[in-house]
Amino acid sequence: MRLKDKIALITGGAAGIGYATTKRFIEEGARVVICDVNQKAGEDAVRDLGPNSDFYRVDVTDVGGWIESVLEKYGRADILVNNAGIVRDSLLVKMKDGELVKQMPEADFDLVISINLKGVFNCTQAVAPAMIRQGGGVILSATSIVGIDGNIGQTNYIATKAGVIGMTKAWARELGRHNIRVNAVAPGFTATEILMSMPDKILEGMKARTPLGRMGQPEDIANAYLFLASDEAGFISGEVLRVDGGIVIGT
Image 1: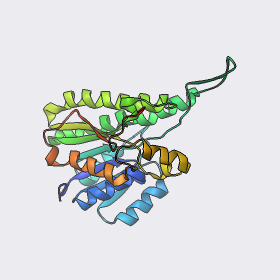
Image 2: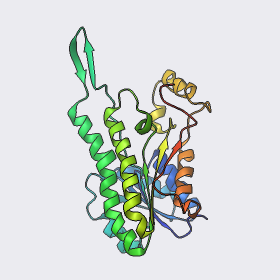
Image 3: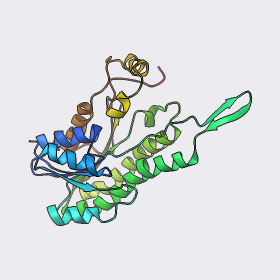
Image 4: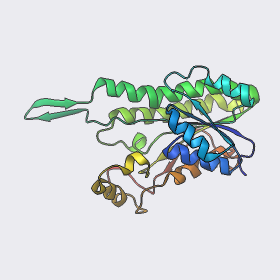
């Protein structure tokens, strides 16, 4: 019961890694508030997870007063997991016979930035004052191995995940004096619903490039979040924990 009686807020908590993290936190004694833009998925998750879960519809691009509502109901916010994110992959430019035939749409760049990067900023800025007033807390954010190593066709996504790493290190410095620990988790190829919808050939290639020879499971990432949220990680802040099976992209 490493998170006994803790109040944890998990964005994007209704599916994939977020759902696995919600489930794992509940198993360890936390009361989890799922913060997700998908109303139906959030309500279904609460029904499945039981009385120690709750759901608030939250759009991370404009968080509004959701944290005030959570504090009014629960009195505190001990853990924030910034997990919500999207992808809109495309090459920066694609040329044929010297002519530009395609490029990453500016709208796709802006959308990914607004959710994956500014969304993390919005949620952390909303929760931090409550953590300061209560004397401490834990802030965890989803980055990615591609935010460290780069990848083809993901300029917008990589920009956000590299930015999350930078913000994590800045916030660890700013908030440490308030007993708030700030860390990030960098998943590798993880068998979420979105990734597993890709062609088998691509999935086999991902496995082949991973030294452990398999895809990560959402529970693998959830366990990393659990460790960093617990008192066992009480002297860890400003770090990025890779959970990637040993992969180095490009090799």
